[in-house]
Length: 67
Image (cartoon, rainbow, N blue to C red; front, top):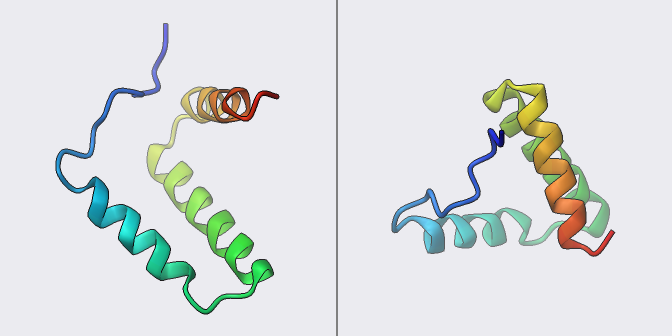
């Protein structure tokens, strides 16, 4: 049974969140952007707090890349 929510769950905030992500990367080097992404992923994973759900998200993200 899946624990990962894949249905749209952000209400009307999706565009604002996307804009905030783009803005957070503005002016960063490629390395800094990757470090920002890694820190954000770890913060959100900690917030989720469920290893099985996080592993499921990782697997789905990789499948989305065709891997």
